[in-house]
Amino acid sequence: MVIIGSGPAGVGAAEAFRQHDTDLPVRIMTNDPDHPYARPPLSKEFLRGDTDDVELHPAEWFADRSIEIHRGEVTAIDVVDHAILLDGERMAYGALVLACGAEPSPLPVPGGERALNLRSLTDARRLRQAATGARSAVVVGAGFIGCEATASLAMRAST
Ligand SMILES: Cc1cc2nc3c(=O)[nH]c(=O)nc-3n(C[C@H](O)[C@H](O)[C@H](O)COP(=O)(O)OP(=O)(O)OC[C@H]3O[C@@H](n4cnc5c(N)ncnc54)[C@H](O)[C@@H]3O)c2cc1C
Image (tube, protein in one colour):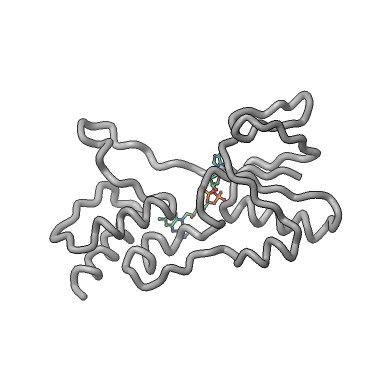
């Protein structure tokens, strides 16, 4: 079983598969450098500086279930021969789950490339660092994540 994506969908698929099959290898592929984590705290407790603990499960949880995590970019899927390419390395699969998530829309204006996105733990660390000592912030995007980030930044400023 090969799963592309270490978010809650990918980790949940690995867990559910393992509950039904104790023998076959279960392998999660991820291009995220961090141990699997939850994104919801990134715009809330993590951005406010109230916690650093955002792991979905500790490393032992994966080891206990023999769920392997492979880091790298999946660049190709060979659906005929049932294999993927992870950073150029070919890996066979019996069943393949795509749990690749989503990406924020880039800001399509001059200077937009300098704006900080908020999607990954790497993004959140960068944003929290930039917020340290900042006297003002502009948030582009007034959906849930934008509003939560705004509230968290305002709470940081008021403490
Ligand atoms: C800041 C923030 C706050 C949020 N708050 C909430 C909330 O309060 N409540 C709520 O319900 N939802 C919230 N969400 C949304 C929630 O986090 C997502 O719905 C959830 O993460 C989706 O899970 P997923 O497993 O489908 O995808 P993702 O979590 O996006 O995981 C996708 C995975 O695929 C990997 N990947 C993608 N392409 C490749 C590739 N080519 N090769 C290898 N790996 C690849 C990525 O590295 C990643 O590990 C929030 C999201 C963010 C960003």
